[in-house]
Image (cartoon, rainbow, N blue to C red; front, side, top):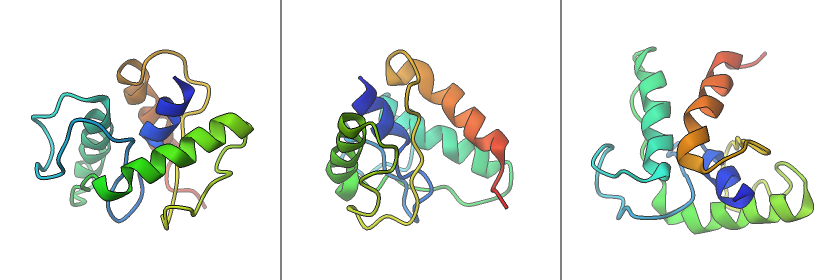
Length: 119
């Protein structure tokens, strides 16, 4: 479960957002896909819209790679330990958040968004 949880939040701030794969052929632009992966992207896009930023799309080509990174991180207990293997520019994870991804992702992303862009 931790692997999938980490993968859901991994690579959110890429030029194209990536979440661990499942259920989407990559052709839709949000909505219509009720997977936790799409919830992840849709939630980020809701936040981006509050700043008049354009929506991101799922980077479906990298979802299996992102999943492998998250699995590696969970097995080594090292957040971002596999960073860069998918040629991503950024990576965010929700390690240790309990429950299935569809139940925890919204709260995890709310916490990340509240942290702001950093210094």
